[in-house]
Image (cartoon, rainbow, N blue to C red; front, side, top):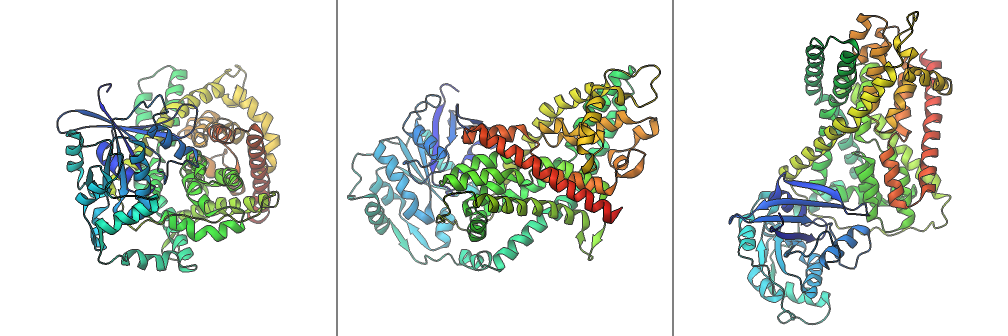
Length: 618
């Protein structure tokens, strides 16, 4: 790719830049971090009709080259050629929303003044026409002194024209003076729009209609609650058949491979450590993908900024800003991108508070743990004729995380010197039908990330845990299960008195240790521990859910199951998240405070849950 054409996409947030990037590159893209910073770089490849290879860089969205955040600084530095690893770009594609030229042309004028080779991509032309806007693209090109291409990225319309323009190298270094334009940017933009755009019906009636519902102080909050409720119902109901299929496959694979391995230790390593460990986590992939599907659809539709606007007053009362909504929503997928997304919050006070509470959002890594415990202790019943009881409990766990985050931020508010309110300024894009290709690529990326974790850290931890649970071997006179004599068993018995008030047995204590690397490992860890804790073959053949729900002598009480569920709402079982907090804040003091308060909260809430449940549920 050294001789490939190098182009970069530049544009405001919500201009359709990422849709264009996905349509150009498909799945031939990768994400990595810039050296020394946590800002992501998304790079893809595609081929022009002439056969020439193209390397395309999707830069973070920005309203101006006068950067106010790390994301915007990266875009500015790439445009100015200051980042050595990117080098000079052959062309910049300035992507603008055709329905909002008044805002989006400001960045284009800055690019033109820098004298960079530019091609203007006039995106969302279908929406502009639907509103009755008539844009004379030829006159716009003459006024700006750069070529203009019309596209509708979500429908793949205009992409051929864009590829042809790149093939013919129509991107040009702008003229030093734009035709007939003088004055500041606002005056220039007003002059351009007056000359090239005719507004027949400027109102967006569809957006106005939906905003009357989704931005209404009562109907809007009710709609948001209903949407979240439906999502968590679907996570259980839709995923069930796929999970059953995956579970059946890994059970068959373990039995099939086990028949060909005669050595007992090697058989245990492969079947109990590797296959059971990986299968115990992969089985929850359908639930994670369904959750991501809904989040991506809401993002693509233009709803998420409205939810942030709607919740701004409520979040301010709790010591947060409406801008915290999108980072916190991202934390439902994973706290790491959620914490990184706080870079869009300009106020340091609001940003730090958001970082503190982001780990309380129920990330996808908790889903395997929640699903295991809910399936073990909550009956698969229908409530009021339509609601899945297990889905209701899952919804309750997510809401517990949200409420806890609001409570923590409310408490932190009292320790802050600056208690002023900062105005929320946010662009609300038009509602659009979600781009299914974008949704598919997003789901595929998340699936790859999850499976990579299974194939990497979870696989390694499963083998390490198997070793700790297997060695040293029990003495010949030993009467207890082999794991009691192992390193893991010794450590579990040491920790058990500390966690006994929470209802945790020594097997749970063992599983919590590797969970510090990745929460979902606890499922595989429990599977390994209980497989090796069995005293007979019949118990070993039972499923983990059957064992812990009371199907054997190793079963837990309902109070213990509920206590462990609550523990995972709060406990910071993810070293990668803590490392991200360190990179973002540059402070070990912040990391230490977060770790202590989360573990303290987890212990307190689990203690209360176990003691109350033991008293009232027996």
